[in-house]
Length: 294
Image (tube, rainbow, N blue to C red):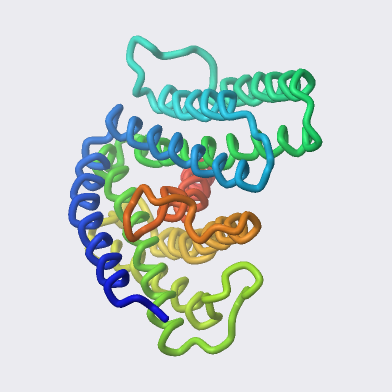
């Protein structure tokens, strides 16, 4: 039986986090630059911590120091590529830096698992490297989207507007999926992974995401001189399909390791991975689309 007091407290906590977090997040995205990169760095570090904690609870032994250092280095490489590091800028391409980080991390975790013998050595190596690429690599792409160079067509304001639009669209997608799933959903879409999500809710979330992105063009928030309606529909599908898949991926991770939330850093909302799992898929996919198509 649900405790009404606990449920009310959870709602109060959620509202407090929203009231403080949303204006702060808006300001940091608006400011951009190193402050925004620092925010993403913090998100990545906390996300790695939550990930490692779940693995340790399942009796695996991932390598925390290489994971933290490599994830931080990837975020730094993304910020460096975006031109945010000033006198601390490194030469070479983002691809060069990413490969160097992955190679060094692999060397370190392999050597450490030779010296520290466990029954799950190769699994430890694989899980450590997976966390670095998933959380560090995908998380670092937030910086690339916010700092994308449109060649003078909108510039800084367009990068801000698109980033905000993606955040808002993810939240709207989640809300549509939850509301329509609760009211109309009967058939579960993937009960082994996420027992509460329905086919109706998932489709409604995707349709809501496309609608919000199209509306962002109609209202002028996203300029149609740079993006077409087809581009906006694709952005909506990136959120509605890949964003929800990111949610399923993290749900599978939590089910595998027997936890309800990845953490409790955000009262009433769970952990960092719970809040950013969809964006961890949306941002890298958006960056690739901008890079290869736009």
